[in-house]
Length: 118
Image 1 (cartoon, rainbow, N blue to C red):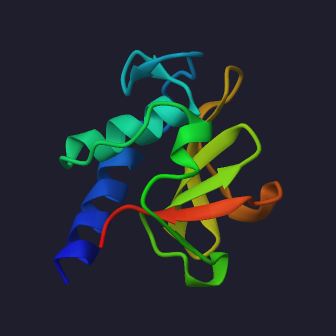
Image 2: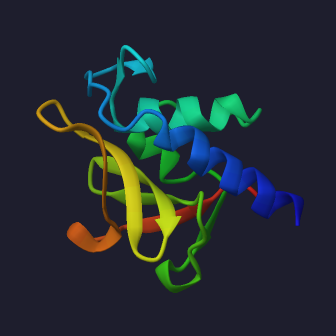
């Protein structure tokens, strides 16, 4: 489906920024972004407008269960968001110390999973 192609392209795009800095309040994929700025900037690249902060992103799109989560969905935690890669993995602007990195979706309790694409 077109949605799957967009999701895969988004993940490939997001992966280019692994190792880049975490900057509180930032939305630059190269100069630095915070968790929600990273997600917003990746979606924006594909023409999707989503809210700027993690609290607002928790209500974007529609809710799906973690069991139904697909690559490209937004995993929402308390005060944090990540992009789901599939297979229990995420990519996120994690902390100022670690920057943008891969991780595991269940490393913290998940509040909700939001689907924007498809």
